Length: 202
View: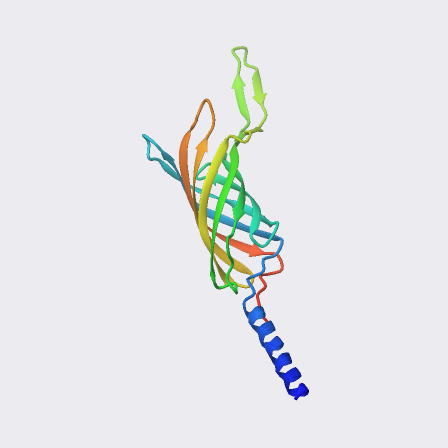
C-alpha cells in the first residue's frame, strides 16, 4: 500500500513539474540588436511628417525590463545627416510561452537631436588672381537630453532568432529655441544574441 501511495505521489510531482515547465515564459537573452524605420511628425499648426530609419540596441536587465538606445536619421538627408537619438526604459508586463506569441510593451525615456554635415572643398579667387582653398571638412553637433517621450507597442517572433515589432510614441522637445510636441511610428526587427529560449523550442 505504501509503495502505491509513493508511486502516486511521484506521478503527481512529475505531473506538476511538467505543467510548470509548460507554463514557462519566453526567455530573452541579455542583448538584442535591430533596426527600424517609420515616420516622425509634428503635432501642432504644421502637421508635417518625414521618414526616419536607424539602428537600435536593447539591453535586457531582466526578463521584463530593458534599456534601449536608438538613433534615427531623417531621410533624405545627404549630404547632411540629422535626426534624433532616444534612450528609453522598456517594460514588458508579460511574456508568451514561446517566441511566436505576441508581447506587449511600453516605453518611457529621453533623448536629443544630432546633425552631421560634410562640407566639400571650396576654392575662392581673389581680385589679385590668387586662389584660396578651403579644404573639405565635416561638422556636427549632439544636443543634451532635451526630449521626453512615452509610448508602447507589440512584438512577435518570426523565428527563434528574429522578431518584429510595431511601436509608437509621443514626445516633447524641451528646447527654448525649437520646443514642441511630436510623434513617431516605427516598424522594426530585432535579432537576439543566442536566440530566444522557451520550453516549446528544442
